[in-house]
Image (cartoon, rainbow, N blue to C red; front, side, top):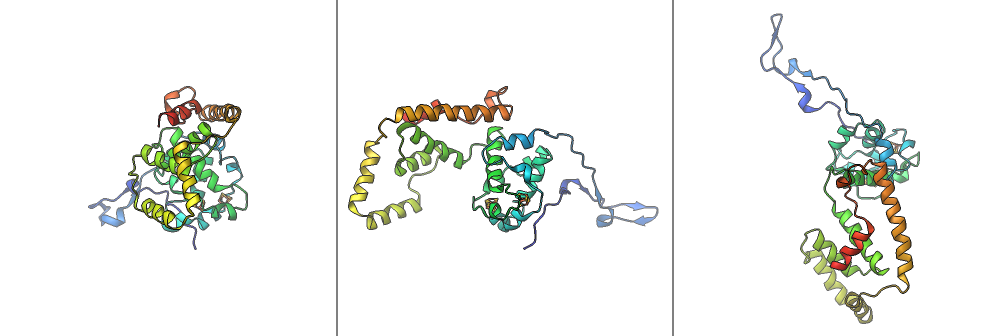
Length: 264
Ligand code: SF4
Ligand code: SF4
């Protein structure tokens, strides 16, 4: 499979004169194609450091642009515009405006880790994709993704009770992301569970959903997690220069997450 690359010549920079004659020679149409000059003036020299400060982006500096990640990528095989090697190049050279042109597809990484397995430099490109998607959200370039909403719902329940009850996580996720609870696949899954799972297991799952059990002595663990999460979030905000503009920080603090969980 070839390495799919991206043309740096933008369609809007191509100019064609329908009627043009130069020194008596008709060069109309295709023959008069000009490429407009392209000057990048808005480098973000801190872009690589910002991505490296987020989980998954730590080893981006190791990339030597071999293209193996893009060549093996599951999503690239379906959409040639999805190009991890190219985005790593843009990040390392600080071309933020170019990166933002692809902000609506970067989140499409399916975390298959093929890129990570083939990367000769242990860059962990899958992690870089996650860090970049996270960066886009924190900087306010993209709305909160469903995966971020799921992450919040999942974390809230852990922080609140020290346990995960799948049914409640799914219900909260659908509610908060504005999706109908009666998804056809979910109805089918529930039907098959009712048909095939042992009665005792089903009863325990139902009770857990109603009673909302908590891990005993969870308070101390929650305090430790609170300290760690708040510390990491403060680190990320600082690395992305978000302290000066707190309104841009899309990442909720732990206290807010626990409060949100109590209100549902
Ligand atoms: S496979 Fe690794 S070293 Fe090669 S371009 Fe991708 S991230 Fe860079
Ligand atoms: S983890 Fe993401 S970037 Fe890597 S190969 Fe899979 S879809 Fe592509």
